[in-house]
Image (tube, rainbow, N blue to C red):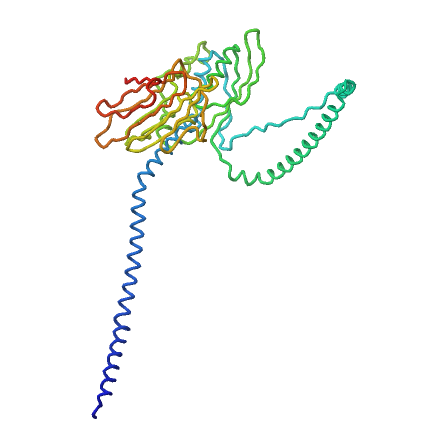
Length: 427
């Protein structure tokens, strides 16, 4: 069969279409699908890689944040017992009683884990004096009638306001009672124990014992005290004490607290003999400086830079920074109306937290404002942590900076500011 030229062209075109369709359907489309799948996998891998690199890049910052957070937690819980151990508490109280020359008998309750009791302060309304109406009449006779009417109106308004406040308070109490069961579910509980101390001794000894409780390293709460006179020179009574324990992050603190020093002498050979038992006595420390700063290597378990007020037992004024580079700290000292103020800041923290123009009031320990800086030698060439302190002294006192144990070859501490009001001593 002889085909015309036109038919041959059509057959060629048809063949090309069939080949093209087959290539697209069985080869090209499958390849495109595979390419799309590979592209999606590549995007997923790139996302995972980017996320992993971001995590790796933030590890150092997270380590620094973790170290600072750990230090803050340790400082905040430092004054509380790591756990309630009755034997250790007995020895501690015995030492405090002996140092105060107070005779005491201890009576402990059982250890409990519950929320801290709150004290509700209630205000009682005072009745008006029966003589007040007579006084008001004399005021009217003296020409103060208008003022009296105003006062009466004011008292009436105040009475209405108080009634409204009492009504609102009752409503709030009802609402709080309804939500009490919900709050109890979220209540923070701590391990605690109560102890009644039946004491006998001079008033001076009792006062000394109460002061020793205030200055004791472990926080002891004196909830109540009942005093009665035994003789002219002697008082007796009952002192209710409370002890609270907060778990420590570091187990070494618990081990140190529970360490029993058998080499020391506790108690007496005879419990009925005269004389005091010997134990570990607590001592109060006196501060000779106003501020403390610590500069350490970044490899230390503690933050590389710590700034604080020296007599801050609660450690609320502590500011930290942790990085293997220079940390700039500014300390501002101000005197206004015969009152001294301070504030300081680092690159990522400050005290006080609120933006205060003056800062926090304080009383200098002496004729000068003393800043003690404790440093240490560099660990290696990669140890770059340092402190750059700038002092703004707007007071009439000299700011004395004492730097101790700094690296002699590559010092960590540099101090700047008004040279006429700053004195630097390297020890």
